[in-house]
Length: 131
Image (spheres, rainbow, N blue to C red):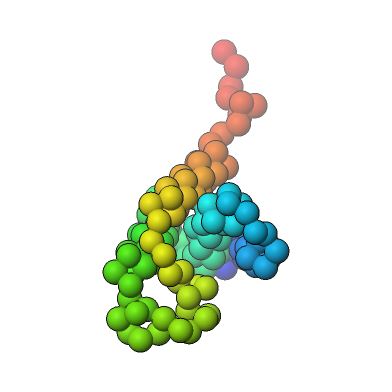
């Protein structure tokens, strides 16, 4: 079940750098709020699968459930209820505002992970025997 995948670890580090750069330097209405959320799910998937070996659908749905839980926490304002709404780091990491587009972005990110896994495992056109 446990393993270490250097390629997935490096992918997760690269995605983290991209996410930090987006957070620091991009101020728009698509890349930062939407594409960033898609990439967060892909990043989490890369992190999980760099240390845990499991079926792609298990990993992707687990990451998706976690992302949905974070969004639900925003909806019910967990930071407010815990008295942590003024903690800048938590507001950045967990977010503060529920948005249905975030749910869509997380779902797209999960789908991308599954498509990438399936396509990387599928035999190529050259692997079929000719009849």
